[in-house]
Image (tube, rainbow, N blue to C red; front, top):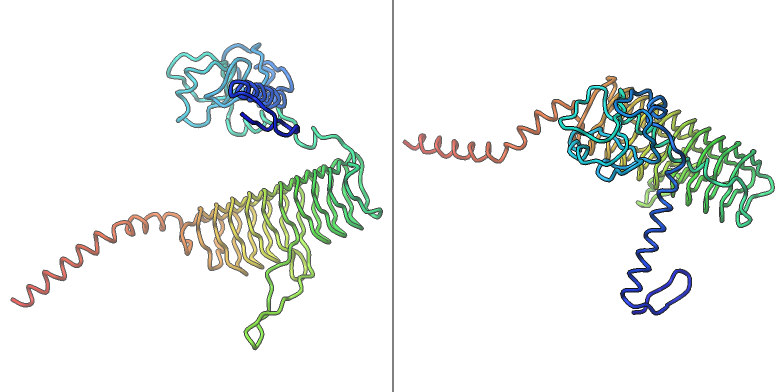
Length: 386
């Protein structure tokens, strides 16, 4: 058969040769993936100390890499955070497992247990230990294929990847990593220790703080959706002369778009976490430590409080105020101000969560209720005739 070799055009291989080739490639790729995680050897006791846990088993067991509970093998550490996966633990050949302090196995298990107060938090810390961040792994230099304007002020220990473009007047803080094909527009200020993933665009005059992560194809500073209706039914564009201000420790997921303000700033406050595919309109303010899940949309000039939780596909109309600590369940639609702090709401329009649940129970019964009502109407009609 004719098969395309890597970078060498079309070559001739038999089916058996092709299978052998693909298997060897897969093995090389697997070895590479494991190598990226296998950065150290650590004992169960050392790891328990790292995550503030207690060892139940062999404290000298050597751990080299993390693994999923259903795939754990020799040298690996896994975790049990969901009881639905407990049955995998009794067949596991892993070396260690993170479990909760009160976990009581129903059968004998092979792995050494490391008991922790919060399994998911410990897993996050574990993965940080075993895999270096992009900023730690990458070579710190400016690629010869990057374009950096002579007026740009670049800090120390910065990486600028291939085909990245840094325009005039840009400032970039120390230890920041800018990966391939990133565009940073005129006058942008980018803080220290940031990681900007491939394909991201940060447009003119936007400001990004320290320790921020922008994932692939994020767009910061696109024009806000501003058009003035004209007497002939057409629309005239309203110039968008503001910018976007992103404070420290903000994480923004892939393909998220944050529009620049018409005037002033669209603001994402310190510690906010945004998922993929989110739209933030012009002059929106997102409060400190607020988290927003994928495909949510926030219209212009909405003010979102601190520690708000916004589920996937939530829509928030423009010029609204959302109080601190509110939780909006997935697919909720918000068309009015939410001024009472700490509420949990659901539905479209969004109702208090428990009210929506009770209403939904009634809603599901409507077809049956309608049939009963029709039957009663018919009976009443017959009685009236008599």
